[in-house]
Length: 220
View (tube, rainbow, N blue to C red):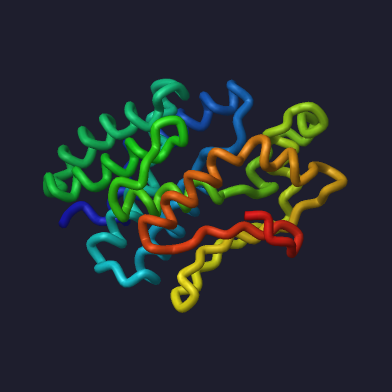
């Protein structure tokens, strides 16, 4: 297949769309959706498939989908998964990617947002898990908002976040350390419950049980 992840990562066109998409989300008051987020999603999605024994083609497609999954925010936050999939189709087709590989990537991108998402294939499931578990303090841009914006408060409260796959026990565990002086565990569930239920579906695609541990206590 071509292009490979390095060609995607270094594409001026794709980097421009990611930069402008994140600029739009800054204006809307969203947490960071720039290169730190998409790079983490690319790495985690690929890592999960690699650990689960998928071939290098699938791993590479997961890496590409993870990197490109949020470009639709350059159009609008609403329906950004679908607009991003259409944009990715045009870009990857123009770059010479095989149709069967384009299909996998755009399917994953089009199915990553919790309003319309579903783990319809392995790459989509891996992308969902990588995207929805990226909760961390460094995604908060403006600390002044954590006192009244629950999204910023919950992200800022997360001191450590780890996603661990146990292939023997067939479990995938999101372990969070939360400063409850900043945000309660209940606040976290108020914001992220739908995302965690989607992670459960995505994990089930791989025959895994999704678990969540907060401050060393199992909550899911």
